[in-house]
Image 1 (cartoon, rainbow, N blue to C red):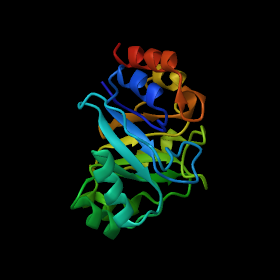
Image 2 (cartoon, rainbow, N blue to C red; image 1 turned 90 degrees about the vertical axis):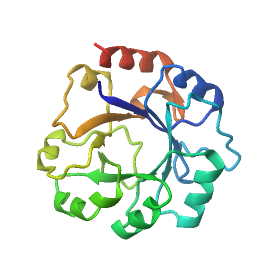
Image 3 (cartoon, rainbow, N blue to C red; image 1 turned 180 degrees about the vertical axis):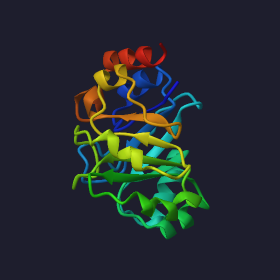
Length: 203
């Protein structure tokens, strides 16, 4: 079964409801310009320890990332900006790394080789000035150009129809990152849609 990462979680009650469905990962956005920014006073609700907590950052300073990891007991950091391989190297000494890349027809997959030693997973999203959360898909056929061995998530406009079509691409594609297509409003996940997705993936 594909791993599931539910990203853009923001509100305590909604987080607890989504956690009852036992996704593999839950993502919390610490990027201030995002509509799904958790806010300065965010308090992480208690959820099942089997669910990995992921903090999403965009071109943030190392010290703030590490303080946030400690404060919220994060299992992973997702770097969703233009962070360098060296930055990933330095950060990977303290926490697990998911490095996200915005994909379009001009993306150069060869640059991934400089990141492979420092990242637990890659995540491929639709290229956007918003750094994700657009609800737009990229051409999944571009992933045929993937040639390294780091397991990856696909993101960007994933909806229930794509999941029903089971459009996975290779053995390295181990997970789906879902967000806006499973929301009733930014930061609030539609629990019924999430249930439908989980049931579909368990078939």
